[in-house]
Image (tube, rainbow over all chains, first blue to last red; front, side, top):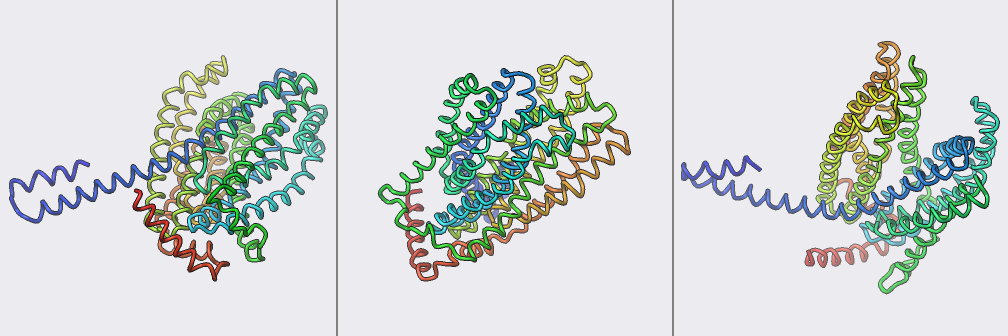
Length: 316
Length: 191
């Protein structure tokens, strides 16, 4: 900002003609630039803030689950947390990464007003995610063997498997939820996502209280997918309403006519998207594993856990 | 960070799909700027609370001291991490996510992890060494991605996006483009 104001004052003394014109144009240019930037920031704020709130509900949900697990007892807390970490690393990170491949296709299709492509991609990604759950569910069903093989205690592994078994519906619900979220957010529609996640979170605590009393560990794990199911139903009905209302895009159709090249293109985008997410995620897990091998491991792990606790606030 | 990245990818891909290369370019750079600023704010917050944070979780004096030191390094990592995530989002918005994958692979696995191991175990720098190794890897990753983003030819990307979004609706293609032009002018008039 300061250079143009300087150049504005200096020509007054010289009284030469060209500098004022150039300073005027730079000033207009700067004003336009500022206006453009402000406009853009406003648009981006509209997209980012609801997403931020949505991610916040996701973290609060994990925190609530951990609190209820902790109230059940030490063994339940340890195995539940272990099971959930396993679920994240093998399941949810992969599903999230795969659905990120939807972003470029849906975003560009929305920009180009090609609603057929949007519809088709939503269905294709949902199908793809459901297919991806097959190998993941195989891993989940054998989680006790894997954990024992990695040197975990037997009772912890068994409880963790029980926890994952009751979390299983969440795998399929996430397959529906992730594409819906991306479908809406790539059209710059993020407020409904925020409201539905917030409503889900509001019901999470009462459901947890009820189920934890009735069924213990299994109840806590069931509460996770029950609230997710609510969010899916809310979002799906929002999408249906939005598409069917006057001026909606339902009649554009194109849900089912998918060709081989559509699938090829989607798969070509999916692999790197999924790998990017997973590679980054796993690298931080490796950092924690490496910390455990330091000479004063106990203290170092404590330090890194506390520090990373803080940085998760930023990953929202 | 995640929401900023999603936002960047949404904005860039929407504008590219609408064949607005200039607007896509603006969105990309504005989101990069926002992320850099938020990264710096985040780092400042981290430096500010580093004395208190450790004692919330532990009473062990050694751990509290360690947290105080590591928060400084972690703050530096966050400054890099924010624009890194947004660069990933921009690259994803242009439908070329493999660029992000290569940068991640190179930065994290060929630089960050080996450097971390070297510094922590060979140079016996402990946890600080691990984090410095990560910082070096992340900076390299960010430089790579920023170079990718700067070298993006937005006109070409917009053309590609048109192909991606219209490759199968050849017969309606022209009509839809015409429709789209008219809505655009309406938008412009409103703004």
